Image 1: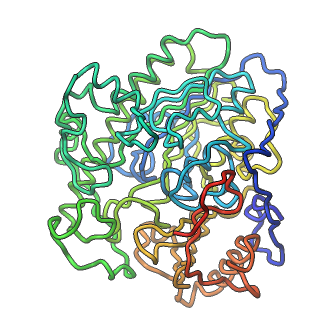
Image 2: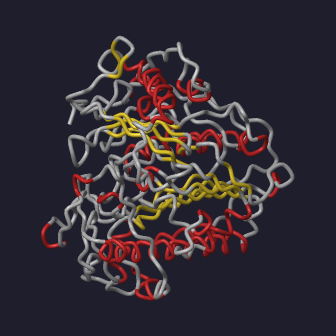
Image 3: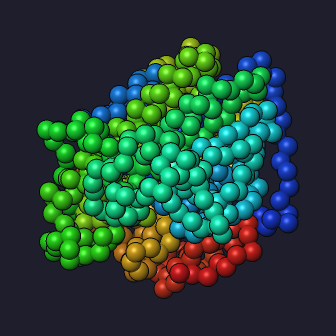
Length: 523
């Protein structure tokens, strides 16, 4: 049974998953995408933020967050309540988005390097379907200038230099606007948990550059081809550095305090910021400190939301809005102090749950009602098959992702039962895990020590109580444990032996399916 079929099933046991074939670069073949006649393929405007947690939008019920433009998209389209990042850190999440594959099948099980070439690649496949393809903002590929089928990219890699002599387009532009000035003058590091107001002119902020550049591309677009435009903001990822006028919007706004589980006492000791590193992944720094960081984080979201509003305005001015599929999502979330955790890579909601909004072309208005909320679990790898579907192409049968169209048209009862999540060891030996969730129940298997966690998300969205040993959940625990066995079985005896989950001393960063001759050593 393929992963896709397994996840669509209920908890029927006794099935096994096949070993997937690796796709080394030398064997990559060009897939033929059969195009159906389409007089007017929709433009695809794919907007994503970096490290934007799922509950940090007004339309997701967070009354503290000001996000009117994204909320409006949700009201005109579909809001997917249970959107997840299967491997919640930047590079593996973006590999899943790029390929339509699950972590084991695209080969990245944690924070590593996106491969140079994959069997399936979103920009290349849409290019083959007749789209002009353009990427703006953060891609986080390796090498950083890799196109993966884009006709062109304009990059903001947030100061990151991972390729020899690489300078992002944003940094080059910055030097034309403010020669010799320091783009990092605010003084907050890329993974810091502290916060502060942006110290330069607002127009120089990377969020402003990304939004303005996207608007310029749309405004100047003059082609008979449909446009695929990926707009990737580098915020609200730290540094939490909004311009002052956006922070001022949150004056007097009550900011929700971090959730604290009855299971997270290991890091509960209160510390001052001076006692821990500025980028500490675990630390109890107090509610006041956490809420200050959250306020700046929310302000960065509002800044992004304004840019989304500008993109929408220009699309309408160009007459492109009605015939556009517009998506808003993120690569992963941000714990923001929940359970004394910061950043991402964790199975918990703050890290793995993401925004997931789709505004459909007007031509589908009679089929897909506006303002619908979908509870079935969806993930990043579902975007590529959706785009292929709406562009009139043929979705490869071995792609793990599913087109969202059948789901929103019929609320497909055959939709997958669970999202599978995982991450290789990061920040701590014990942070090596795999999980299953349907957005209502979450089961977590910790590879390193064999411990289990389970959370009833309907009753306890903040995951404050680990109900794994509660009598009323014993049968659910057993079913999900068996489901995890079936999910991991294709990986062999290093993961499942004699029908039991295996405790692993060594983490695995790349699966055998990773299509590069790079090191696959554990970390």
